[in-house]
Length: 212
Image: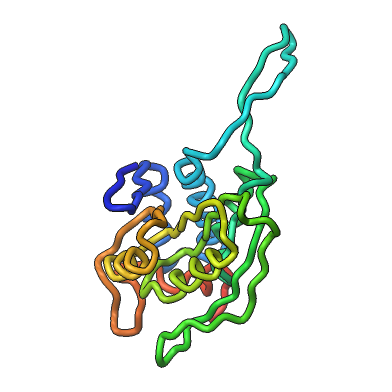
């Protein structure tokens, strides 16, 4: 993993291989969904590299010893609906005990302004580390709004995870939330006139769920 100015690029060969397969426009819904799941699980290992641990006693078949475990209940994955669900499933495979929050946002097609329609979080976020999940950090409008809403609940910490981003999205997020680290598998070239990332992945929600 390489890191620059709060942006952490997960450049593991397996992640990069699967991102390339996801870019193919002829990838089926089933293939695309599976790849999102696999990439998200692989990224979880880097995103959670600094997660807190505590020591516990354990009896092996040979003797008693101690080992370290995480407290998954203090970790919250926040899915930005609807496409964030794809990343959520992969992350939960790695940390099934994590709590889950949801933020419903959509981008108004003409103005690109973000509109919130749903918000539900676990309690006591002040004691929890939050990882916000959204497949694309494009204009940054929805990501900035999602992180802002989460921070209103005063979480212990916040990270943002996406599959693909671009310079415009990074600039928007770092300007609004300079202390929130961004984890991504790819930093693409730019946005087009409609706010889509180039070369990008297309509409991730449509590709995950088979809708248009």
